[in-house]
Image 1: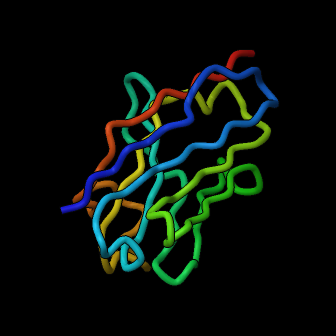
Image 2 (image 1 turned 45 degrees about the horizontal axis):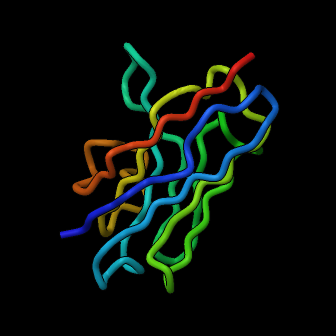
Image 3 (image 1 turned 120 degrees about the vertical axis):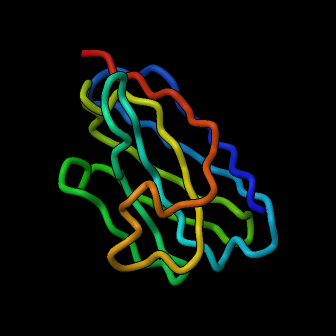
Length: 125
């Protein structure tokens, strides 16, 4: 069982930055693929970033070049640095974890067993 707690959300003006953190419980954190997803009102949950147990990363086009995912296995934490934020980035952001997902599955929310409670990010224009 893995418990995830996100933090770092808030209100920021367009063009600004935020850094989200996700703290995980459990002794097997380093073996997990960690994903970030977001969900805006009335929309489906959307893939934002993922980082594998070996440090590989992947971003979808809407955030590539603006968002950076990283992890610190010593602190059981994963981070999402978000720069050049846009109003369309407004959503609740979730971190997720599971093992053995790298490849064709890490961008699919349904593949992750463990989820945090989410943190709100609001970008004003």
